[in-house]
Amino acid sequence: MEKANNNTSPAPKWKGGWDAFFGCNEKALATYRICLGTLLFFELVLRFRFLHVFYSDEGTFPTRLLIPKIDFLYRILCVHAYNGSMLYQQSLLAIQVVLAAWFTIGFHTRITAILSWYLYFSLTLRNTWLNFILDRYFHYLLFYAIFLPISNVWSVDSIVSDEKKSNRNAAIVSLATIALKCQVFWIYLDAGQGKYNDPLQGWSLNADPLPALDTYARHTVAARYLYALLTPVGLKYMTPTVVYAELFACPMTLMASLFGNRKWVLGSIALICSLHIGIAFTVRNTVLLSSVACAAWCVFLPPTESDLRIEASVKNEQTSTAKVYKGIPSKIAALFIIPMVLGNIWFETMSAECNQSMKHIWSTLLHNRWNVFIGAEEYVTWEIAPGRLADGSVVDVWGRKNDVEWNMPGTGAPCTSTARPGRWRSFPYLAELEGEEGEALWSYLCRQWDEENNVHQSGNEGRKLLRFNFFMLQADVLPNMGFSATRKRLIHSHDCTSQSNFVKEEHASPSAESKSEL
Image 1 (tube, rainbow, N blue to C red):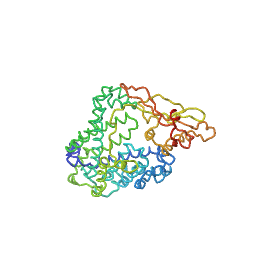
Image 2 (cartoon, rainbow, N blue to C red):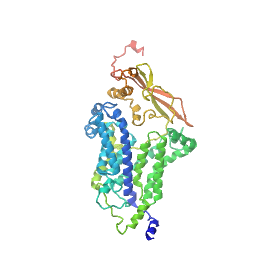
Image 3 (cartoon, one colour):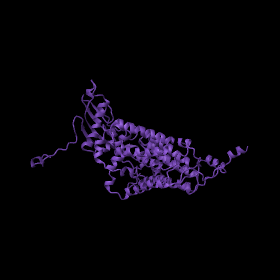
């Protein structure tokens, strides 16, 4: 009877305080590790699809073009640029996948955190064309994970360790916990400010011509249902709430932690995560990004009521402050965290333009801006690459289809990922590349078509791609899910039979007679 009364008694009140404001409890950190590691695992597995095209010497950016453009430090740190063979790239990525799995289960957690961060950084350096905000999330969340005691519970390390079990409810405060919470605060402050200060006021009630949510809620089937459910009027009034959610979710969570208000903490986390879940359902290629953004909020989770009850029941055996801290010593952590923070400030405020070039590591290591989705979408884009084959037929090289379809894709609002998802999104925006870089980029589509259609086998010679034109198509976003007439712009014409499509011919000064013909 006495035992039953103890189980049914109300849980002790969570006290919060400055420790909760600046620190994290061990279960929250373990949840952070598991979520981050799982998402890292899936992201790295997905990268296998892009090794040949973006990371090998047979792809669009061979190492012979990268090495002459980067400085000595870049060459030393980017191990992915040491060799451009597919076997080497596959081996490195396989190692990263294994490390991500070990990090997730908490096996040699500190070592796997360090190696996972470094190899992800190196992978990003190998081809900075592909550096998206998702990579920035992994970069900073893995970096701070190195200095956090994320393996104290729910890990292989904690099971095999003979050390004294720690108090899972007591907040662990360190430079790393403070820096990580400040990083999350900065992410949403920068994103919210960008939307709030949008010159076209796309995220306000005064948006002209359309509020941002009206233009973004068109990308997927789920987005279309949302559009029909809320109507343009509902989207108009919901649009400003996104800005204020980003600006105030983190401060509200921190203040609720300070005063020990569990419901407000969980409510704030649920609010911001629901925002990211909405993005994942309504905008293509954002599931991983939204999930990683939610993972960052795990560090704000308060101790559970059951853990508080257990803590009270063993109070006589273990004091509330008795814990094992397995993080890197504060002085050593400071040697890395403080330079990173100061480097972020230097990069955004004082660095020269040359230091912000992709030729140096600083643009990847220190870039810390998060102002995405700043304004409303004025138009949507998609790509088509009609190509002529040896047998005279015309195909869509970009869509890898036998028929060329010029109409807007029908499944939600089109975007560059309609035909080629994921990291292919960067391809059309590299159109300004010239010389050897441009040749490597565009000729890859010729080789890819020929390989996929087995043109070198007897009987398939007619499927050989001779030339193609790459078009970017645009349509303005109009009210009531409408779009304007399609515009098309020729980005590049490529002759697959030519040695080079980027030979610069030198011409003599035109004579008066030739001038009259121009």
